[in-house]
Image 1 (cartoon, rainbow, N blue to C red):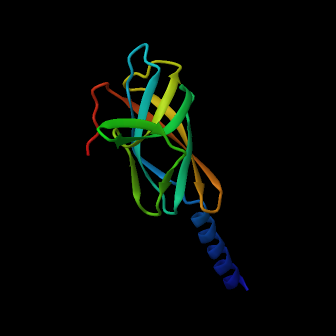
Image 2: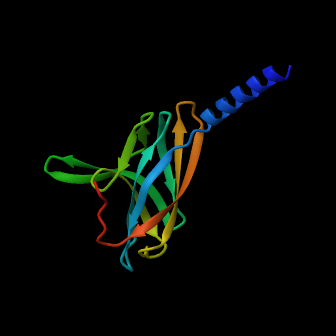
Length: 148
């Protein structure tokens, strides 16, 4: 009687942990800003064990945050807002300068080297369930460039 209960309990524990598999955020950073600057960018690597989609970003340091993409149009590099970024299961997606990234608009304060900025990333899975992941993002120097 006790053995079948253990098997059932173990199976439900495995199912529960798989259902709550979280997106991982690697190497997040934001470049410092100058005193009057009202925009900033956040960069990171995202990885999910299941296919999901980044659909929203929020931060208390900004009036609004958006997901953007840099792309060449003819001979000109353009930046535009996108409605989300797909994360294929088990693959890393880079948010970096010159590609997908997070834009912070209407900054409420100067972002200074050494600060930690909270970002809340919202993901939607194939099952339509939403998952919020909040990360503390370090502010790097104005001259910082991420390693490739």
